[in-house]
Length: 187
Figure 1 (cartoon, rainbow, N blue to C red):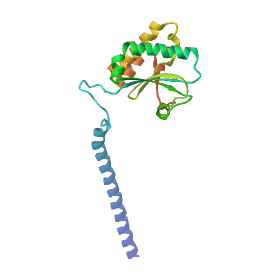
Figure 2 (figure 1 turned 30 degrees about the vertical axis):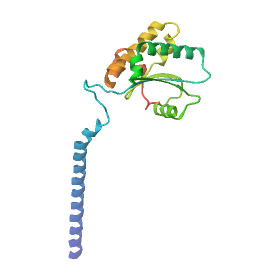
Figure 3 (figure 1 turned 180 degrees about the vertical axis):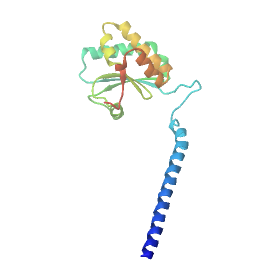
Figure 4 (figure 1 turned 120 degrees about the horizontal axis):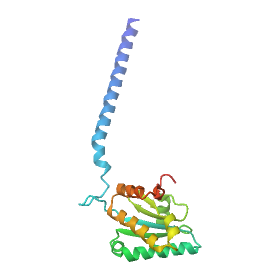
């Protein structure tokens, strides 16, 4: 019996040591992760001297074929705003406009459609991880109130070109248009 008791004590001591070692290993992993992780979180972000991201601003116009009259008017109005006010940004690739046919997308367009989870006709402004849905205002004002359409588009594009993603989100909420914010994770 004493032999069994002796083995039990050794076995219990071994288990206790093993549990302590697991605890130390877990603590070591957590501490190392906390030290290493903050340096890697922002490693893939490019920051310029003025502290703003140098990421391009994308404007995606997704449409189906055949195209309706309103769709063509929206695209013409959008091209008028972008070519008129942002030719320098287009040339420098700071602003990129892509019209994507949802009925017959090429492989790159399919990737964008899947990434943004697009299922319908949309006009999106994408800056980093911020996605602004401009579809509603685009269709509402492009034909009958072009000046207002121009003002909305110019305001959103200027804000995206000059601000960081967090400032862009704040701007959209200040405009009292939270419905303009689009989250690819939700759709």
